[in-house]
Image (cartoon, rainbow, N blue to C red; front, side, top):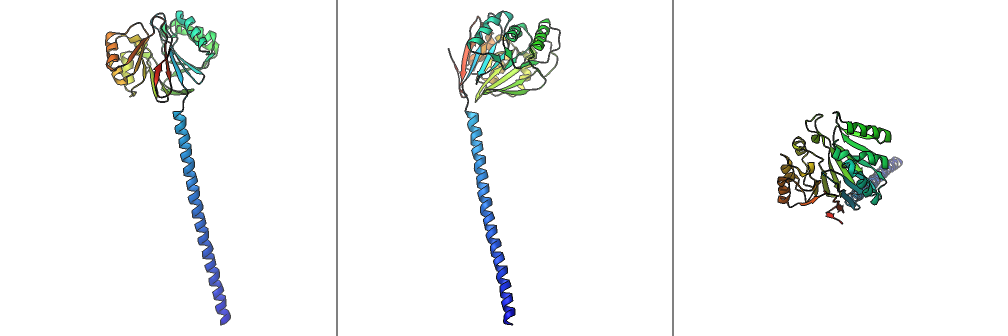
Amino acid sequence: MGNWCSIISNEERLRNGGRLRMEKWKQAMLVFLRAAGLLALTAALIGLLFILEGKGSVEPAGIWFVGTAGDADCAVLLSRGQCVVIDTGEEADGPRILEFLERKQVSKIDCLILTHPDKDHIGSAPLLLESMSVEMIVMPYYMKDNDRLQALEDQMEQSGAPVMTLSRSREFVFGDLDLRIFPPDRINYNKDNNYSLITLAEHGSVRMLFAGDAQKVRLEEMENYELEPVDLYKVPHHGRRSEKGEEAIRQLKPEIAVVTAETADPGIAGALREENAQIFYTVPDRDCSFESDGEKLREIN
């Protein structure tokens, strides 16, 4: 009987020991899982801080509007050694644009945006293609007969530069510049100006909008983009009167407005003054220069 009780007592001790080891193992696993969860949370928070720091940490970017002899567009954006050119003025403006790029030590254009095929926007594109490397060209869909555009397209093919014809909005990054390019909503317009690509460029929290020569129909389309106020607005169609032009200014509330002409329509200029916008003109041959630090945009000499 004593032996039997001894066997039972041993078995109970074994069971109790097993339960004790199991409890210790569970406690150890719980501590481990808690520690692992804390480490994972810490890593996630560190990663988020890096992301937020990266978004807020940008190097200064330069934004220039090259002065032209007459009403014409050419904007140059530089960030971290990468260059975006929006339109190329008239053919006669080519040497001045090229000299400006050389002065800024630009040896290649990373993205050439041709908003629409009017001569005061694509005029100097052939010279730029001949004179320097162009990594990418962005254009709107346009199928009308246009001898100047056809000659340019032939030269683009010879240069080997890839051409993107946008059918939907696309986003691109060049240096610290985030670009979103909006193509026209239709494939056919009565007025060529309404084929204009509209480009939103963001540098940190600084927002800049380049609206080509957008007129009434295209500006109505732009309303649907629900754009927030901008720091800089390249006023479309050289500041000429447009039924939707004043409404667009009230929507965008720009702090700085650039008019690629010698003067603007009184209604457009009045709407800009109502929004307390500084107005800059690029004609004749007036370069307009700005610098963004990612938080504010300021004029520079």
